[in-house]
Length: 527
Ligand code: HEM
Image 1 (cartoon, rainbow, N blue to C red):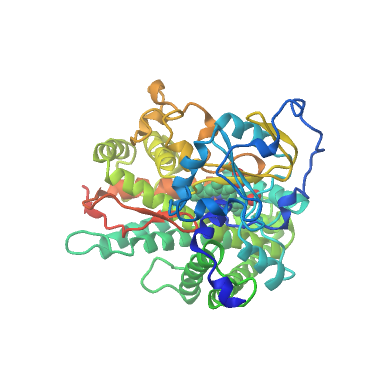
Image 2 (image 1 turned 90 degrees about the horizontal axis):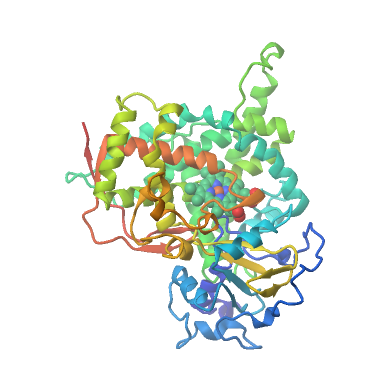
């Protein structure tokens, strides 16, 4: 049995991956049957005039093996990169279907923003997004008693948790108090970039790991009220362990949830590594959450009202449950490290390969930040409009989350077809962001399209650009991600010129889309 499972063909993992390009990697579970539907599933008015679900066009399927044939030699997806499969699928029409394989659900691709809007505006109060089985398994079995994390939960449980977390993570006042700490962590990576460049001013081959450590250090500040020293040459023991564990978790999730693996049937070495690393992150998180509780207990009554509270303290107050704070800390670390650090890598790359845009950005930075040694302020960050446009444009042209998913919670009519509740829908960021129909001169890096004064370049439909998702289930860490990314991009280009003197860098699909080549930027000091 084990040997047979080990031989699951490589191409199947492509499909599995398509079903889960959500950042949070929770793969298809039993929830796909819309058991969490919050809305009555009355038929839409145009249902009877719509064509049946079976008429949705797509690659050929077979009653026995579903869509498998397309992935075999001669099939249209054979050896096609995952991110490019969207183009093929979209060529069937604005609503296209890839039949499920070996019992997995079909995927309905929505490549027209108008249909995406209808789907997302009808997702109800408990939107369903599927993800990685490895995390689901960990929470359900290994960590019995620990509440399901936000990314892993569905239905009412998700809504209650999310409501409490929204009040903490989305309030501008809460974000503002992290401007100075995030600046300080970012200054460390700036100093480190000066130390780790070689005699030709090139960044080391593992520069993306350095960015991941910066993202980890930044997010533990928020999630655990702790500075773990991850960026330093001598991190404290918790910092060193956290770096190691988070690296192992991302690496093993790719191997468990993306590549073929029999871990659900037999305990594989990668599965054991994954659980050990998750245990490590949970233990360290629990320790700092406990410390946060102690701090809160010891606040003198006279200070209670006027004191400002950190995200961790606010979560403890709102949820009245330290286990929830631990679950949320895990979410922040799982969803907020590789996403943020990879977006930063893509922004640095786009600006290094578009020197005239880098120059325009630096003119803005020099004007807004006259003294680069002083910590950045919120007011300065707000003034950096061209920089924000550069970040937005990068997330359009190089979206690291190539698509998002939803399971429809009620019957819908999309593109003239009946879509029954429980259908897995996919919204393809990568396809839409690079599409001339929605973004004029789509192949060019043009931050100006996001600023007033360039009406011809504007995005034609806001539903063609959803890097953080949409609606009540959209990224809860978005504001922190913005703060972190803006801080590091401002500081890097205020301090340095970046050059890319290599062939165009290739991308590869892991848990998110990442660079396949080492990020050997040439980094020289600016005055
Ligand atoms: C640039 C970096 C990031 C990107 C591009 C990103 C993108 C996304 C996307 C597309 C979703 C799914 C939204 C949907 O289904 O509508 C999501 C969900 C989520 N993100 Fe992020 N994210 C980023 C950074 C972060 C950070 C820093 C954190 C934590 C502080 C975070 C925490 C989460 C959580 C917890 C969810 C699940 C929300 C839920 O299911 O209710 N993300 N993110």
